[in-house]
Image (cartoon, rainbow, N blue to C red; front, side, top):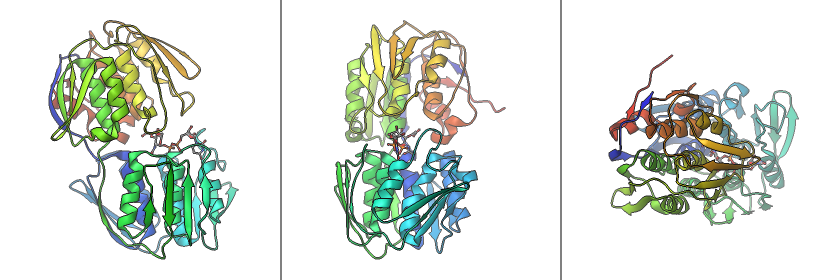
Length: 412
Ligand code: EPU
């Protein structure tokens, strides 16, 4: 329940990145021993990844913002019951087949996973010498041993790049991933893998080279901050007005989106502890398209659209990564927004204020976008959320409250 309460003021600390920690946890399966990962966000998806690793025989322990993972001999099987809860479970595919020569991933119907295929993961691993078979219980992969090769991705997929990079660490010879994704979370994963003894160069660029090694070792690693959280609070500051500091946020990993916020009238700049944000005026309409990094990430889009609903002028937002990622628009319309979608475009005619109302959150980012949209509305809003927000945000409501917002959560 969000009651408009004026501008946001204060500081919050941005937690570790969900889309990094889940892959770092998957990477631990590459090496026996006790791994420690710091700056781990207290979110539901980390629980699911712990359960997944435990189901394979690992020991996990979470305390004080860290997770300790003890890896011994594992049964390389990711059961459907856990995989269906979280797409990031697919990140165990590459490391498991590389270390154990076989893997079973519980995906219904082979390679189509909720209309988000993993064909590039599978064909890339096949280029390295794996074989996959679609069975009713999921995808079964085997290999007599992976061999380095050149893999050119048809699209810079984040998940495929990560799976291939992890698998190639234990392959014989050299692997080159061409047209690799460049997201900061990939560089974070490469940095942990290199600490483990891998030989990876070029992460963060479109061409990653991996020299295979015989074995890797358990390490300690700190997760990078969540740039998607930081963007959530930037948009919140634009919607409610105010001035906030996002401690730990990394400006260098958010260049393009900060530039877009600037065009909209939300000022950002790097400061000693993180990023300073100020929203003092009604936002201005802008056009934008989502693109792989360093472009404006698709995950930022719901917050940007929420902000543009109250901008002066008309904006066109184009989604280039995922078809149909505009479900939350109908909910924004219930709050008085004037948005029309046409294929992968949303046309947003800015209104002065949203009106408040009752809306439903359909996924993590959409849920967060509805909460922040309501901050600047004229009346109270209720966001009905079936646990989506907790999958990705440790405490969205608490963070906003600490900045002066009136956001309450009630169970049931
Ligand atoms: N694609 C294929 N075949 C593949 C792989 C991807 O067609 O084998 C397509 C996808 O369907 C999509 C596009 O390629 O249209 C991009 O997918 P990508 O593989 O890059 O995305 P992902 O690895 O599945 C991660 C994040 C997403 C984020 C995207 C894009 C994680 C756990 N997820 O997904 O984040 O939207 O990259 O940046 O890292 C979220 O955090 O809420 C979230 C969904």
